Length: 345
Image 1 (cartoon, rainbow, N blue to C red):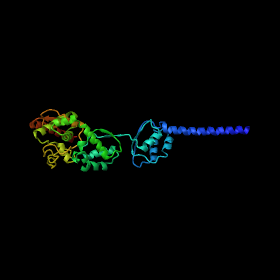
Image 2: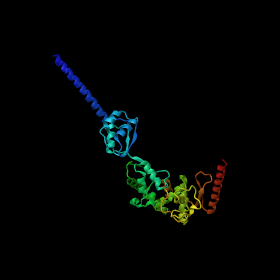
Image 3: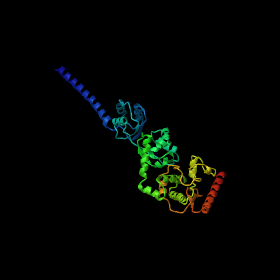
Image 4: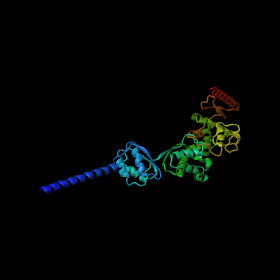
């Protein structure tokens, strides 16, 4: 009887141990698959040929992993990760993160095109700094007439298909996918109402972008942009040359800090001191405020403007050349006084 009792007790002990082991295993499986294993949120960028073990180390070092052992168990059998941008938050289990990286369940990123974009290469830098596409690939695309022919433009009209804004898209989007999206957004921005507003000014949408880029080169002071747009529209309507300094600066890749008389002699279709009408393409990627200024310009009879002598970023406007000369002399005097002041310091 004693032996039998001992055997039963041993069997019960083994059963209890097995149940404990099974319980621990079951809990681990449940934890790995169902329970959140992260605190807070974090963005994760997976580049091509990223090592899964390196990702485990990276996540563990973030200080936002509750159970490193859970993460290691789940990633033990993972050999390949999908390139992309992923967002991990406090609801994610270890298993969900592993599957997300294996299956490519990406979170979109913001591609923000804002600030000064005066050249195609500036646009290249903006895109390559925010997307996986490298600068060489992006540059090859924007400098290729063959690539841009898909959108009905050549390299001179590149900025007519780019509306500065923030766009959500996949970080891994190809260059073609990026510009397909920008092209669709440009089509969407040019509503029938905006096209009608451009027509009312005697412009096509493409010409409106060209003029907006000149306005952008003249002033960053938004309240004044409709007035500047009105000046250039008045010049176009009266048959005057635009004589816009920013177009000359464009001819020299924006290198001169000031436009001198010698610069005005440059032989280029973009030199509006030599050529009548609009240049053959935008000289920058104008912001929406400049586009709207061209579509809805201030109504006035001004034909000239020059910088205000207070150096506050605004301008003085004039309807006659005599009045313009008076304003220009006032600015030159202020500029000379400012220069003398600096020399005496």
